[in-house]
Amino acid sequence: MIVKLMGAILIVFTAYCYGCSISSVYKNRVKRLEELLLSLEIFKAEINYGLSMLPEVFLSIGKKLHSPIGSLFRKSEIYMNKQEGFSAADCWLKSLTEMRKELELDEEQFTLLKKMGLIWGKGDKGDQLRQVALMQELLRQALKEAREEREKNEKMWRYLGLLGGCTIVILLL
Image (cartoon, rainbow, N blue to C red):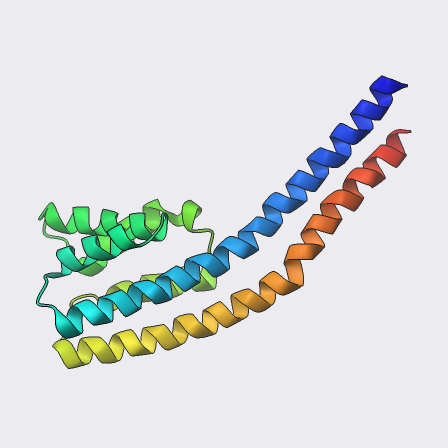
């Protein structure tokens, strides 16, 4: 009897943990988008008030932000400094592709980040600031949608895991 009870507890706990892991994806998306907005603020400040080169700006952003967003900027900076003839957009896309899994973004948000790579180092200071402002607005919209999606799905997945585990235990008894 004790073995059955321990097995039942283990099944319910495992199913609940699985539901929690899925719900954490929604929470992490919101964090990633908030950090991306912060990275654009740092980028604007560096462009507006500093005379740093793009790799230096990326390194600065990478040091100030947590992983995986900070790592994304640091990897891009490393690729830019290798001087293999790639543009800033190519370096961004390469590091973005490598870090796709860690970013935990949906397809629409990932496409937005690809587009973000097209603004790096293009045009003069004014053009650059306008492009960043536009990208910030798009990220704010994506963040709003991610928050709504998190509110809708986070609890659902936790409860679904718990109820799924209970259902499996009932079926096995």
